[in-house]
Amino acid sequence: MASVLHVQLLGLLVFAIHIKEHSASLFSKPEVAMVSAKCAAVEFTHGDNSMKEVYVFAKRPTDDNFIQWGDPLEARHTEEGKLRILLKNLPMGGEFQVLLSSDMHWDEMESNSPISEKGLTHVKPSVPHAPMNLMIHRTDPRLNTKVIDGSICVDLHWVHPHTVLHDNPHDIYFKISHGYVGEHREVICSDSVGEAERKCGIPLFSEFAEFPESYMTICGLRPNRHIRFDVEAFDCDGEAVARHITTVTPPNAPSVIATLVTEAGQQESPAGFQPTIVIDWIPQHDARIQGHAIYLGVTDISAQKLLCWEPHNRSDPHAHGHLEIPIIHKNFTSAEDSQLLQDHARGNRVHQEQEIRVTTRVTGKLESPSYVFRLGEWLVLDMVLKCLTSFESDRTAYVSYPVVISMTQMQGMTLYD
Image (cartoon, rainbow, N blue to C red):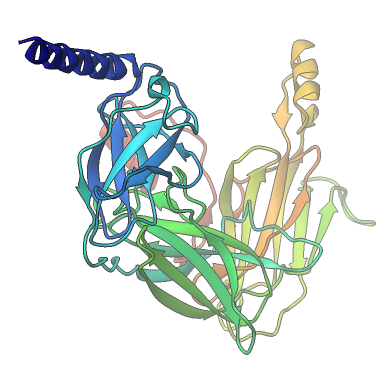
């Protein structure tokens, strides 16, 4: 009778210790939420939900002890309010269990989680979906400016069905590389498995596209060179598939001469004189060149528009080889915020300084780096400038029109007759 009572008391003591151990832990029981051949997503909660990283210990069910599974992993929040980590380099087709800890001493129950249920990795890894629709586009002229070494920039676009990272084993990562003919390849960027933010690719979401598109601005390229770009998609299991595109890089920035004509010439009457900027460029002998794009921008502000398009083909009646832009002088024009605020505080009407950008456009809708010059206290009179206002235009038109308030639809339509 005494021995039976002793066994019952010992069982209650073991049960009480077990309850105390688990109640002392701030971790919930880890849950293996998703697996692949070599990776697993583990979700849990913690009393301090602001914790940044967690130590992971893993073992097979047949092992006696847990071992620390690499460096501490970054814990990220899910939409359900849980914390999630991504385990890597697990054995394929094997069972495993994990234990989490806020420090590297897994045998101290106060800082440990309960042991998870068994998880089973896949026997074979799955091959990622290949990148699609690789294209080369021009880089924004505001970013692709003339530099000392004469290098140029292009934008590489591609489409892939899995561009959003979800912190799970089936996330897809990208690596971009390029190589010139006869030279070794060079890696431009590569995503890191398990990282929350990409290093390769900025997504472009559209409601009308079947799959999201991504792009990467690649600079430091040599002009007028045959080049191949590779986009590789890989996953947590190490499986990868790549696609490539070949092209010829755009030329370097055009050599532009900009002359401010602000006074009438000698022996000319000042009556009716219109100040202008004469933009001329040294001809570039390249069969790919289609013309020159002239942009109007606001200095130190990310605002820009296409001012005029000048075709390169001499047989085109709109190809002049230069451009005359009417301008007007305005006091209190500056790009400095402090100067504008000071002039405005004195009751003056202030103006933001403008700048002109000139690029060489080639086949494939690519553009060279832009030649930039600022206009100082002169502003462009785009309402009296007439030229080709788009790359598809075949007739000249005024760059802009004065704002006219229309009271009726019929009155508004007469503005376009």
